[in-house]
Length: 100
Image (tube, rainbow, N blue to C red; front, side, top):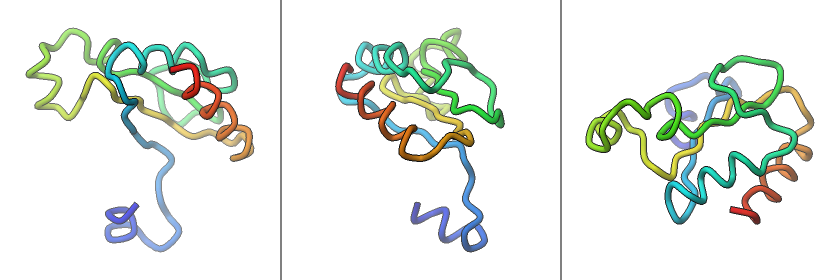
């Protein structure tokens, strides 16, 4: 958020974000499999909220060192936020985090 405020015009932040899940790869995969509103897809820019676990999908062909060099960690979740109501997205993520 701090970098976005520094580099982007006021109020013009993007809708793609990434965060880590405590515990690494298994809890991250469990989070992905537990979302109900969001879809597990690799594309971005959809009207729907999308989630993906890059380490086991888009970057799985890379070694652990190559993934780390590209900024991908085993706990990383990438999100492309859609047009659903923010409270619905938060509720979905909260229930998925509770299961992870």
